[in-house]
Length: 481
Image 1: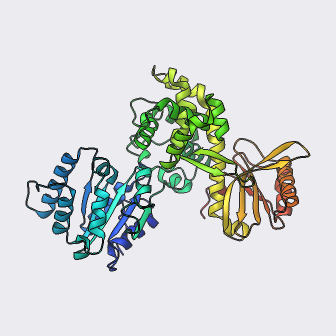
Image 2: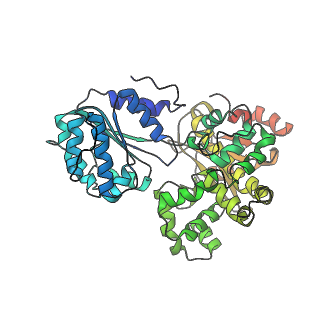
């Protein structure tokens, strides 16, 4: 198998999948699809793969069909060593020339959605090439297509789409997980700083160097200054990235409505009714933007672990949460170049509405990744949930609910970013466990868990040791698995 280049950080699983496809001797391995949100390093990976295999690589741009064909013709001529430009009469001709020039080896077409936007028939033409009797069957070439427009790439192989059933590789390149991102930014030994940083830039690799001039916070004390000199600085590309992401991914025409929906979610109004109420609009008015945001992967809809039919919405890109909760609300400062004032005004919102919920999400990810070691079996679901307490006429919020594959409740957890957790938190989890047992849930093996960014009281530590309560602090969250 191809060795992963030294300049490719992590991405071990993704590289292995690409290398297996590129080196597969199977005749059926002719076509693969790579997708993922923008800035995740897909192009970097595919370029490295093309270099390692000597493959043909073409990156599409947002052009007319004629200009795209001209660029493709120049790339083919360069590959053939003839110089100049192949004269191509449509994509059917282009594909015929492509397989003539590259009869074996790897072919990579990056940003396919740009080509499809100008030439919708291209998907059907690719189908004809890949079908029995098509050009691809007469060669040993393998074709990889890639794209960042998640809605387009998601529909490429679905339903009655022309290419459905043709791919032998469907690879999604996700953001780095929170621990890998901390290593990438060089803050793995500073877990509090790692959480704060991940709450802003998430696990998107491109934000580490290109978007901030390789500037990373030196330590916790430098974090606020780093935010001011990078994220809130109009001269730094990261400043406009959240708005560009929304425009690029959704093609939104009613931009204020989309920003309003994201702003509502970022501030904790994360149910359909809550979003509509915050925007003072009927629920029907927000259905379309929510669907579009889900389709392009910027928002995820997450079912309640214990209440059937109840879901909440979460922004999947931390930078958009930061923009919606902090930057957009303090834009009057930012547009005047007053970044320090904007940060001062937005810090409390950042801590409560951005970092707090983000920490809960990191704890769910921790529970999912370590479920077998912590709870004894792989989970079917790790999610937030609510448990009704009729006697108290209230609801108990469970931040980290881990459900087993056979219906048992493996764990109930509460997460607090800025609070030192004590016995009252544990009592609340005990009450939730009893209520769930009364409703018929299997809780005999349920392990209670407290996740805290500020630590635990001595009383809680003492009881936790006696009752096998899981305590997860920041060092544990970032410990080597």
